[in-house]
Figure (cartoon, rainbow, N blue to C red):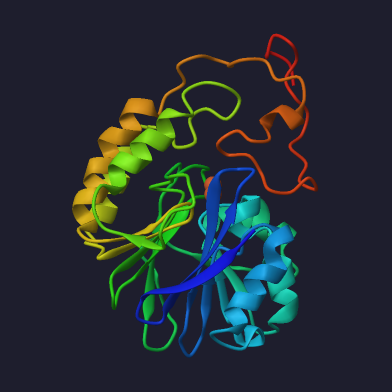
Length: 280
Ligand SMILES: [Fe+2]
Ligand SMILES: [Fe+2]
């Protein structure tokens, strides 16, 4: 695994690790400010490589805020490692995330954000948007850096490959192709289309991002408003189950190498469905 560090906006660094077994990048974003913020930690197994890259920018022990969209391993799996290495650090997440998972999981209490609440970190400020099921999970939220207009987009605009750090052009086309690979099987529908999806994405579009910091794939520089509005149709096309429950999987090992496969053997994928896919 090779890990790269790229400043994609002033004081905003993209830390990216390409995992060949999964065919995707796992990105974290570091904001250099009076109160440094790390958005997404990566898996617990990635902690050391991410910490090394953070140390190229600032002292990792000074990280103050650890934000993420939703409670999943690649979003916040290394949260407690960060809380140990940075004594003043605090998780910052949605209220739903705090009460359902983070207050129990984290070794120190999180800061639960309200919808549209703003977190100032010094020169920069981060608006929190509650975005249930966008990209997925009911605890989902996103942060928007208002000074340089960067949306920390989590799994929105997911695309695969060992791609360039920052791109212009057809981001939604890449996402549409990648999501199309998920239309059946146990990992189908990574981004659901709900009755609120359009409203939430249009609300994010109205923030008019100039940079979109994507958790898997290239960051995007350009018309974020248009990209978010175009994303509505891309998700609508593939955001519903087309076959339930999908092909039977005999073993979690079969999921390795699938589009959203996980990079570490240490990660427990849980029980596989039965032969008919109906029992868990
Ligand atoms: Fe996710
Ligand atoms: Fe993810």
